[in-house]
Length: 472
View 1: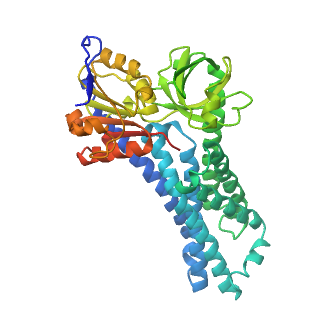
View 2 (view 1 turned 90 degrees about the horizontal axis):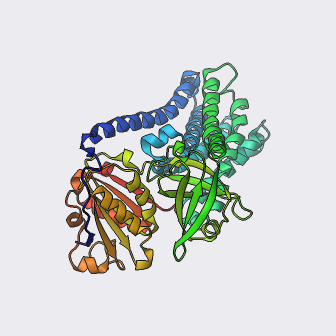
View 3 (view 1 turned 90 degrees about the vertical axis):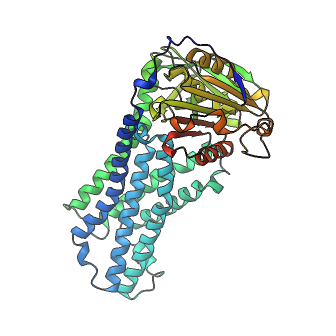
């Protein structure tokens, strides 16, 4: 076993969570998630079906018509995927509560390549199909196509979309700062806007008075309406309502700072322990970029706290913001909360700055003595951020708390310290009730992947693993 912190709680302080039917709650959320996924895929099928039902089915008489029609279908489905991606990126509360922000972002990213391939196929097939019909080389067909109304905008839209998808590839994304990548990603909105005119004016597929035109205009209204509402209007209203400012900063370790915030009716934010906000600090050097940072303490009526590690120039600048700085917010986001529980017991493993959402999660979660086990991991004593607070919360709530300090092991599971690995410490030994527990993991991505793989090897179902990765 790793080093254990002994606790003697008063079992009368906290009611047992055994009365909560976590499995039933999970089933309800799973059904909502399934309906959401079905509706997303159905929108693509509806786009193709409307084309076929509106006369498209009769446009497969010759090889040229077949190629052209396939190009049209590819364009319709690809555009539908792009609009779905915008909806997923809008941070709609219902989607966040159903599948969580991380999964929504993962689906958003997964759709990027198929959408781009479909749109590239759309352009290529139309060039080939029109070229076959007119007897012109497909490359030479580009000139006549550019002469059509709104087609230059469509070509610009394609170029912007290629830029966005390429910069979203992991190998490329790592070369950008978060702020730079986010700025490039905003081009996707322009791409969709530039593509709309040619859909409405070229080819007659979305002719005035057709069901297709109504459907597509409705999709655009929903996608951009959600973006405007939940990415712009709601955050502005929330920021004005809660009037958050910086109350002070505290250095808790070299390069790690807690930023204390004050505001009006902060409980009205509805934030749960484990969630995060997008923060923007209005100073001359920080106003132009925002930061996704988890709460390190659940807000009271007038106070809140986040803890930041200096991982770049952006985080270093916000660590030094002066008292009184105005702060705007987006959120709260994430399903890394007690609401995600599916099992009667809880296992928690956190490393490095990953303890911050764990600290807030413990503050907010309700469980009876003996239901939760916590393992805190650090490479050095200097990285034991907020450990004293977590120990106090564990003691108050009757949770077992273990600590593990030291460099990673070169034998056995790589996420365990070398000293503990040599002593035979294992995941199953530390968490003997893992099969009946929800496992919450938070920490550096490479380390977390090792823990998640070790947990998966024990046979714990995937839906019982909740991972919060500190990347973007």
